[in-house]
Amino acid sequence: MSPRYQVSGVPAFNDNYIWVLHDNHHAVVVDPGEGFPVIRFLKEHGLALAAILITHHHGDHVGGIEELLETHPGPVPVYGPRRETIGGITRPVGEPDTVSIPELDAAFHVLDIPGHTAGHIAYWDGTRLFCGDTLFACGCGRLFEGTPDQMATSLDKLAALPENTEVYCAHEYTLSNIAFARAVEPDNAALQQRAVEAADTRRRGLPTVPSTIGLELRTNPFLRCHEPAVIQTVLSQTGAQPTDSVAVFAALRQWKNTF
Ligand code: ZN
Ligand code: FE
Image (cartoon, rainbow, N blue to C red; front, side):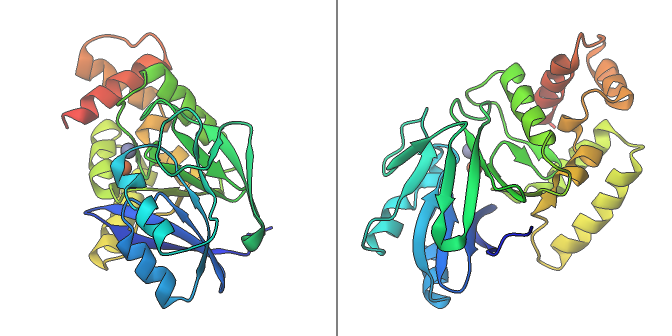
């Protein structure tokens, strides 16, 4: 069953997307790093704010909470990671909580996905995944507060979701992620095709997000740490045979930091 609500991406800062889930009346806002563009969007579309969902504590994801609440009087629940301290959060959540949004007939499973930050969470309703800065289109977030082991476990959890799950990450990093992915897997045909399509999408000024779990499984090197071609690349980069898939992941993430 596909959800009743639609999703619009409100661009913020240089490359953030603030996802607005809405029907014709109500809206849920994910990671409002800025208030102003969201407030304008809600006003233009005549939408009442039903809830705010936060994935992690970074400023480009939480900076607009206060301003947004100020312009929408009345109690608006603000959900966010139980293991992080974030001003404005009224409903701290973690796995296995469910977040119900009756206004949109939606219910989200909360997934604990530490690594980018220590308490990072995602929201998944069976069809759509809002994963902040953990899984990106053809890439993954930096390890600011977590270990490679934690991040690899978090990515495995997301990779196990149904292949048709739509993946809404919080940044438009796709082209640079694809450039890195091609260095890792130069012979991946699905990746070559994605490169062509994503370049065309960006040329037309459109977002490359959402992607799907299926597309990420076929093209995202950070979800492909078991693939012989990926292991081979890590071997030739580091000169050492990685001991397991976490070591492959750690080497890829390290390399990406300076790519
Ligand atoms: Zn972040
Ligand atoms: Fe971010």
